[in-house]
Length: 197
Image (cartoon, rainbow, N blue to C red):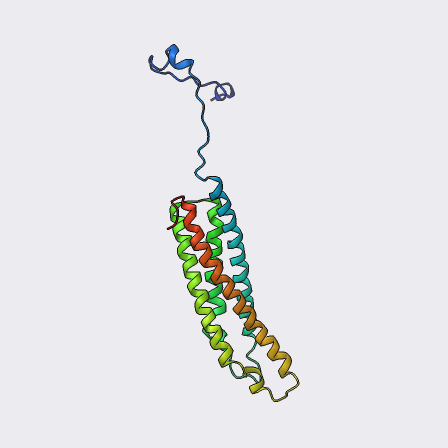
């Protein structure tokens, strides 16, 4: 094969009824099909922002779990209750997954992805509700966690404030995550264009 044949034009042979004068003068106009109307685009953009927030909250929950990992030092004989329950780790996995599915809705909006995203948001809402309950138990069980084992009262106040502060931050993240997950699963119903689910 020489280089002259590579760039030669290609001619198509049509049946006689296609090449008649009537078909050749007709102008065809086409517009690209856009499956999403303006409201759906706005909703998907808001879902993307909420998904990013969910991922950030999941990373923060995981980070607080890693901080609790280093609490098993003398004179404290056990981990805090919230660490033993594993909530900072499995909760963060749920939050990050549901946020990732919300972000994926922007690039590809299919019925399957909408259903998976809605299911992940409902699981994330259940996880956040379970986390709130576990954190309440953590406040009750570990109220004297630091001061109960510390032989020296000087560090007790500062460490207790730090420990309670982390639990409060986890509680705030869980409450906000619960509302984001519920809102996203309800708002995700409207991306299908069929009204409410």
